[in-house]
Length: 489
Image (cartoon, rainbow, N blue to C red; front, side, top):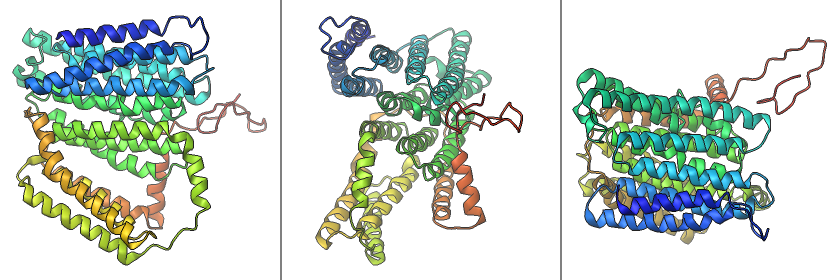
């Protein structure tokens, strides 16, 4: 462990200790003194990332460590006002700092035991943060599900680490590459389970939708940082010579990406839509890892973390924006403009991919997803009621972003993490997922029996089962919470 990592760890421990200090002046939110040592840890993590970039060492770990502590500082600055007067503020500042400490220890560890210990510390701290969201029935459901499914994933990770150590006699990060076929398959599947649980993906997805009941600062940390850790875990165990793990990760990620995208369309609440969006994005991340595109997965993690943190921290003003939109006269969309906008974006994207010479890369098939997303954006802009000049400029900006992604971001992402996985899925899996996603998108805009069934599947995705009344039919049931989560008495 480098000196910078040790100093960052000390600063994070100081943040945990500062959260327990009393505020004698009573002028600040209790425990908000943790922000200062956490800011120091952010500076040290930034220096560590720059040092790794210059020195040519492992860059993924220091970059993710910087992302974690930087986002924690931003969220704590938000919470300093958001939680003012809230008796749970001390719990938030203390355990958010402890979760950051566990995440940093996990992603920068050079030893499998330290990796697993940091992973579990982050899990326990996050479950405590979810529980601190309140005493309502939704929070209790979220706590039970999170503790059960996340600790199940942690148990799988510890089982994988123990298998590696007992089989190879070493706890170094290079030890998994030397495993024989049988233990390699076991380790590969166990690590896949741990990554799936942390990402909130099928079939361990039930905990993530329930966390919409927690506070906004906790939601921001949870969706911007905590769930993203599966990418770095799969990267660390990528040299394991087994095909089972990538198949488990790819199937789980693909199913989650499709079903969570469908579920997002059924949620009427802002946080519920954001939660399902996170699940779908994590599914894409797992698919990218299963194809060996770890660099692309990490870039996706960074983009998702920054974007989702801003959305959660700004969720409180969503109602105001919706009301403002209702008072504005909606212009009739232009079908011709929409087709033209999408066509320009797709043409520029295809030309950039061909010019970049990246079609031979195994992960190039994943460019279908950002290209399709950009095409939808181009269609909406082109068909909007804005002026011709504004639409032209915005469509050109989207096309330029697609070209930059294909020519700059994609090659840089793969250069960021040069590690080659021992086993990956065939690219045709991504094609099947893309076609299935396109089919669901078309069905979502139609009506009929099949569309109704798909709506029901999406609406029920990840939701707890409705309570069964334990009273006689003649006795009226009294709900102690919302029907979705409540119980009768």
